[in-house]
Image (cartoon, one colour):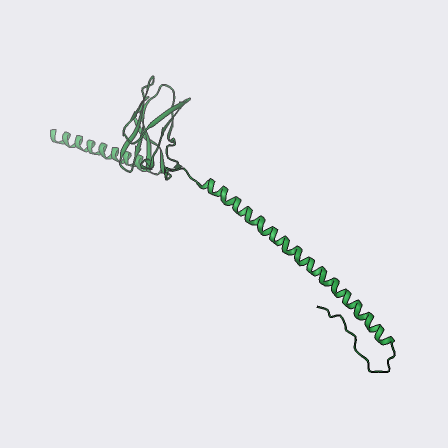
Length: 224
């Protein structure tokens, strides 16, 4: 009788452990399907990485963890009457604020080394049941910072005025050349008209005169 009782108890214990492991595995698979938000930030900025809403009077732990090195960055503990924020590493500066029943957890004064994949999860303590759940995931990119002020605006200003000056100079040169060309063309046309009139007059005079001696050709005006 004792051996049968022991066998039944062991079977129930194995079944309970198997059921518990399947439940945990299902929760993990469901949480891992959360797609991360992509955030691009500048150095020394503040980035919100966690947002959690809950009812009044609840007790919970809100944890921000960096998955790249499996280190907890921030921990916010709510005892129902008091809020405590802890920086878990020296590489991050945590900050939080509350708006109604929503808690926001962020990193401030971020640097290049703070870039990575973050996960925010909540541990609900009260009211029961005790529960762990993933709130959100964030993929953080931090832009490069050269540390030197950019001189591009000055160079752009100078280059702009240089281009304007060159454009004005070329425009003036074009107008001068156009004026000279037009003046030469007018002078040439006037000279042609005078030559044609002179040639017509000489032709009339030559045809109207009767000469017994050999005719001497008169000088004609040549059109250039």
